[in-house]
Length: 440
Image (tube, rainbow, N blue to C red):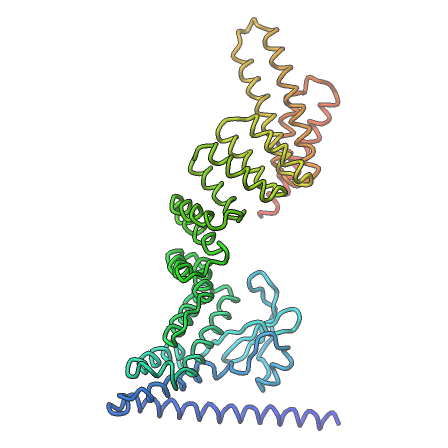
């Protein structure tokens, strides 16, 4: 029985191979006939000739992969393909594990659930067939402007769907610029069909942005916004982000200020604008006013308190900076960063006093001791904050380094302090060694 099943399987594979060979032969003949038609002066003057050529080229662009469907189980997919892969290899794509089923002319990528997620054509039946199909469709529309919204509509729809499929495959493979170029063709064909696809304009801009072509990204995102597609401020947020990436911070500020007039409760934009205000050294009152408004909208957002602390720190107001960081510890008591920053503020106060004490007259022993004692008080508070930060994030070497330094300042205070100093010194050395080993 097993032998019979093997014979049947081999026969099915042979039949599938034979069927595909016949299909490819027929497609080659169709393309040859279409090539001859567009080369004929009389026939090439007809829009229908170019429409037929478009269809033939679309067929050529997907002949090897037309049976593939995203999210299909690989077992069903292989049955539709009618062939077995040359090899199956484990690969990582976009930081995710996949199995690559490698065939002669294409690769299929399968996720951990055994589903097809995307694919890639390696050898085209006719090189650059899809772009040539677009050129042929343009020629058909040039000869007969009504054909795109008439008998050629379905051909155009098939063309844009194939560009979209190829674009999604490129995107999932991490090929963001190639994906954006495919999506831009979807936009172009849609316009030829009399449609405006605002969503695809947006995704074209996003893909260009992720590929770091910010000029192109802004071109498409601005087009989307101009026709009313703004995702409740999301498009403006993205535009401002890219303007900032380009170093155009004033443009980004203007974009966000205009958008917030329409969406005043969008905290993403408020936070982004605050960061830009701080970077461009706007008046603290302007920034704090915006921060207060943002905190009213989102009182549990610890980043707002951290931003306020950073603002006051940059403005040289350590007390207000520390107050903001301490407030952040109340909002998110499990976050190490507010404790660390509050500790840094206290430590700096102590450092400033020590610096002043060193400038005193050498004979002013009482003055020096008084300042040193006051500095130790600040160091004690700093240690309290930093040890809490270390408890929450024991892997942060910077905190260990600061604790080591603070206990060094207190070495004269007894054996317990010396033990703590030695503990953090040993821990710091150990963490440094681990970091160096990891880099080798």
